[in-house]
Length: 315
Image 1: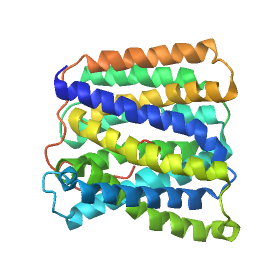
Image 2: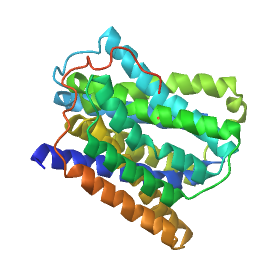
Image 3: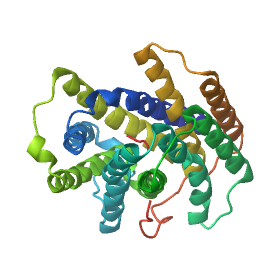
């Protein structure tokens, strides 16, 4: 692996570990209006990212002073819709109609989806090694999450969440080379806020609006700073360096990180099957990382129109 590959792998792994750990911590804000809380989180993240871009304009991509074109803005809106607003809505719906194990296992197919969709959108053939490695990661993810029950709505919502997870990275990859990780993150978060506000109004959530408790406020602050600003920047930078196929394998770290943090929170050791699943995920990552670098998109053209699609995320 060259230096860019090592850096990209470290950043993608770091981002997904933050996401995985944040899933368990998010249990502490389930009593707070979900869509409203997400809108607050992304609004704060957008402000922090805009401040970062203003202080360090060179982080804004290949043309720091540029603004997104109309096509890029459409892609960024699709990133916000699929990867942030719609992802959270579908995930919550899935969890309301299915066991978390089922949802996690379905969404855990994201590495395989990216390994197949990434090259196909470029008109290339998927690399056999990466597809095999992604499949190993998916098997490990399924072992970590185990089995569970789900009705038709829950399964459909889980599949929709998977589509959003895959689209999040594919859409972002089309604009990252020119706009950079900070600008893509800032615009995505800012565009997600009105979407979530509209959803909160439509579902009547704002009728239950209240001040968060001290714990809820701290968790929302953590989600804004770590899970959004830090994790997004790490993921998008790693995605640009590795390409979507290889970066996608690192989403397999999410269940491992979730399992670890949940074990610490609940003070209970994970089961043997879950531990075996983590080891299988690691094996898949090592197998995929040992292969040659998959080229990242060199320009925003790889995706001619926003495909319908699940990190994330992530996040």
